[in-house]
Length: 411
Image (cartoon, rainbow, N blue to C red; front, side, top):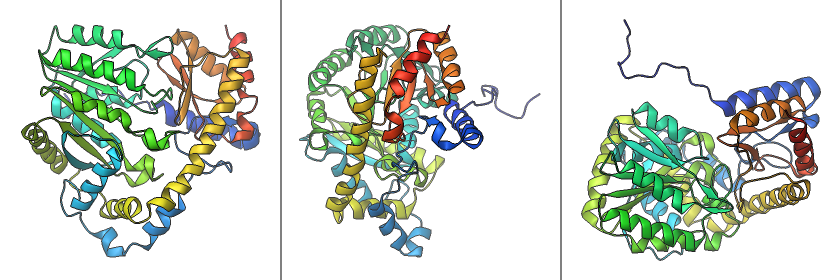
């Protein structure tokens, strides 16, 4: 006898990131913070090893009238000015000609989850990368949706052939394809597809869409920490070539863009050739928003609108300092990793660098060995994630060599 629904998974959740963060905290208390390499935290930290809260973001937020903070949003789909500002922020200088709509969500996570359940029924399959943010799988399984993984890399390039093989396998059992891509600044590898790779992917989507609807969920959580912001959206122009039977939903995260992780604000941006197809999805998402979270923080939306319209130059200037800092950190780590022979997945930009591991059993032993040497990282499928977003430069120096030495000593 049980109180919960029959299909519920009652296995306790184990969040590997938060569990390792707790271990790192304990180790700092025991041996001193300066003697611990804490590369677990997936948020932007300064050189003082404290969470970055951008002044341009929070000085204005603090000044917002309390009644604005207390008030409901104008609509459960999001405030109209927020929805308009999100759309123009997401595409920026990219010449995207598709029909579109925007639904406000609690962070990028809300956009991902809502998209998965909008397009897939229970028992159907979501396609995700083999090296990916673990919550995609959790979101799917919580809604009785299966997952199938494509191998993300062929050497140091995007593995389109694996995408094709995985899609064709899924097509044997369902008449719809829903696939996640986390681009640019992929979590956890820091890879960004080239324009040529996007063109090839779009061509394959169109080929598949001759038979069944194809929905691509593009999680752009880290896009605003791209090394080249001016060109970071240009790949979206490849979507103009999508057929009528294909759609893209962008999962956008104000939480990441504004270093306001706990404020939970984001959006799902729907793109398709036909306005009626966009509207159909919008209707479903409107209902899901109303039935699930009802309202997004009003002041968070108001703050975003002000920042990207009235304070854009100052906001971008402050944020750029941290983009440059992460590039400095990642450049040091990658250079020393190459010198030490420490193999990493192809990294271009973003919060994380990930060591390439072919064997998950060895990865877990290696992860334990690192912790014994006061180096804390996060295990991912076939990899060890190093959060350069939170590691001060002084602790990046020499880290790759230490990790390689421990790797060689791990049995």
